[in-house]
Every structure is written in structure tokens, then in C-alpha cells.
Length: 239
Image (cartoon, one colour):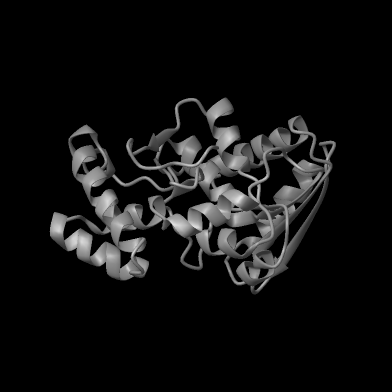
């Protein structure tokens, strides 16, 4: 199996290092100011990014860290404080973030308390050496939280989605969870209409009926060397 550092970018050590924190914090504060006044995300990060001469990844990070206050309040009102017995998971979104964490690559703490990455999917996906461990940690964490059954949705059009489905079902067979995996061409739309959702996708979080912040607790308990970029001073919701 291929050994890969999912989401690794050599320049991240500089662009998200200690010397970049103050610039990123100032940019994030300006970004929030614009978002709270009705600017769309792309316009806001373009304006702020140009002003601070930010790289493409720094701009993407701002977009994934920041949210307008109305969105934060809406998400917090739907956030489940305890894991329900049944969960519906945004499969690629959840597993890729764990692969990034296991790789020691860049993770971002969003203002809504979620942990996001910059790895991206772009229609292609390969099972790598971190995938099995990510799946095992995920299934074990759900069992530890008292989850009884989990329904994973995977984007059908993404390469190797069938292989990931097989891996999930194979590992679930040795667990105490009832696991189902659906391949679907419109995962975002399906999850947006559901409750008990696990995702860090902002669009889904804004539309779904309720959500649980599964990955954050898992990463903070079991992936202690994960690199989480945090911007102190921004209003971050409880985890």
C-alpha cells in the first residue's frame, strides 16, 4: 500500500508557522468583519488576501476557518452535545481529515469548532497507508461514544469510492457497530436534509437538521501529534 502524507505541502511550515500567525489573525478578523456585513466568502478572501499578500492556501484556510456570526449561531443551535445512537457520516470529508491528522499535515480549527483540512478531493481519491488506521480509529471512537449504527455516504463519482466502501464494511464486521455505506451522486444534497450528521462542510452544517462534531474529539484524544492551526482571539464555538 502506498505511503502518503495526505494533505502535506512543504510551504505550510512557513505559511502557517509562528511568523505567519499575526498576519493570518489580522486577515481573519478582517474576513469576519466583511462576512458579517454580507460579503460572500470568495469576495471577502480575495479582498483580504490581496491586501495581506496571502498565498492561495492561506486564502483557502481563511475561508475554512471563518464564518459569519449568523451561521455560527445557527450551527451552534443544531450541534448535538452528545453522540446519538445513530449517525450519518459525510464519508470522504470525515476520513480524509483523519488521514491528514495521521500524516501530521495541516489542519484548521474553524470558528464553529470543527476541524478542517486543505487536502481537497477534486474527483480523485486513493486508499493510502493512513486510510486503514483512520477507519479503525473512527469506528472505535463511535463505539466508545455509544453509537449503535452508522450510515456512511460516499460520493459515487469519486475514484475508489467502491474500494473505500469495501474497507469500511470489512473493518465494521469486526466491530460492534451496524454499518451501512451508500454510494451517491449527490451526497451534499442528501446530508443537507438529514439529522445526526457528521461533517465539517459548512454548506451542509448550515442546512442539516442537527450535527455532531465527531472528528474533533477523536483527533484530540487519539492523534496527539496532529497539527491544528488555531487563531486565538477569534470567537470559537464550544467543541
